[in-house]
Image (cartoon, rainbow, N blue to C red; front, side):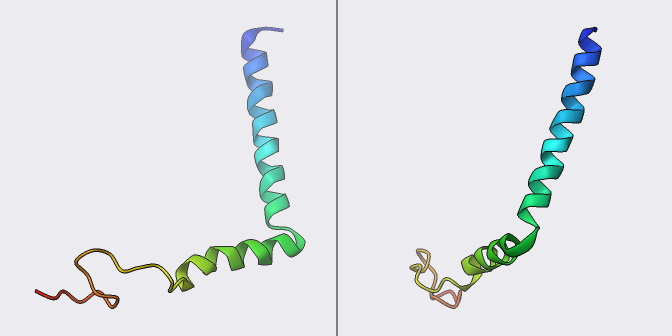
Length: 61
């Protein structure tokens, strides 16, 4: 077995791990939980406004 064979098997193994993680994340109840977590960031109104900007983004100047 040469180093090229080892590299080829490592690429195959890494691809299978990637496919497994994607399958795990998008299967069953985890999918809806991850989608809800992703949208939660967009609905966060408790963060303070950035310096120099009002809450609605208008410039006061």
